[in-house]
Image 1 (cartoon, protein in one colour):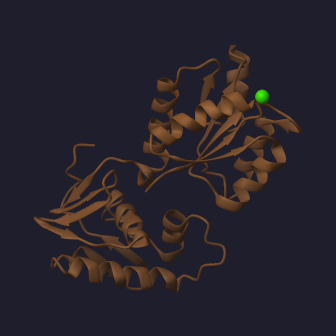
Image 2 (cartoon, rainbow, N blue to C red):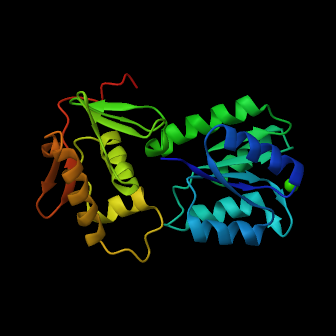
Length: 235
Ligand code: CA
């Protein structure tokens, strides 16, 4: 699953530099150049991460971080604060406001990408590009490939994201609401039974290699992917 990153930055040259590098690294991105646009974009698309400039027209990145942290829908939104201020009290203020990490301008692009990868791995494992293998079922986000043993499997985009999420969190029971949150993201107008429809399609795809039993229905609770042990991809 391609992570979607919101760049909140009013200096267009910096925003463009970040955007070019995110695109090269395989991320999807949107740029907001002021506070109102940033608020609107987060409401509209609920991104997987926000790169948030501190000083913005119409307000500060700090107040935006606080605002998002106080809303249940965006409380877990991964936020990296970008700022020219590098001294200790400001770092503390940024982290206190709810930022997960902090990058001081001017920053190296490689460092920025490394911090993005680390934060996504920590807070959005379903966005990770690392392949995952469980009980012979292998999913590779980088090549968008799923196979069971030697048999390649065909999955639709939603089933792919759903399977990726379940494989990243094996043996845990996920209810429909949680799956809508984690896999669909922006689900305000989506009914819970949509999850059942996509689970059914996912099982149909897996059944071509006779591994549909990996997805278990837990009556009255939700779904889980059964794994004998931890994912065997060495993460
Ligand atoms: Ca600025």
